[in-house]
Length: 270
Image (tube, rainbow, N blue to C red; front, side):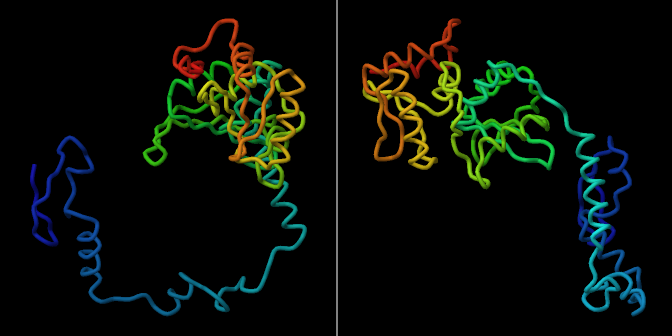
């Protein structure tokens, strides 16, 4: 149904099925505000009202003043109590910790939502990857998946947990992510590391570590060598396994139940 705007006389469409639309008088918010302004008849707020509405600078009675130490401490305590009411405890199995380490050393990130909890955020090209991770980390409750037009990836987040704040402190140094020395280097963690941030090229397995400092990458390479996998660091600060070790590495990380179908292409060395 079409209706004529009471301000500009232009026709606009009205959806009769919606109650709010049936009473619309103007085609836009601009026309509505303009019509309201005309009804004011040039009237203005008094200087006293204007001062009360928008006090700034020295006109503001709180200008140059600040809370006392006791008030600030009370505010902090109230915020802490409110945060504690919303936080949830989390108990992860050893297997889930290994999965989490594999995700965190690759594309996972944990933010410190407040002083008592943290939240893990994930983003991958394929929606199935998020679903698989949610299955593996069954103790953690995640939000619904959403597709980002900017990144062209699928994303989700966990709810806030106290345990994830501990993991945040373990994985971040002054806000910068780094691989901790107690990283759980197991077949499970390396499986998810390879799934999330690894690839094969010309018979070699590569793990992306170019976002980390070289000293931390050297530590990871030494740990792989101690476990019998010969590898080195490329000029782009990535870990490259030698050809024989690439074959044994892929065999080592392959789950007993087999590789998820959507990741099978990663196991092709040629």
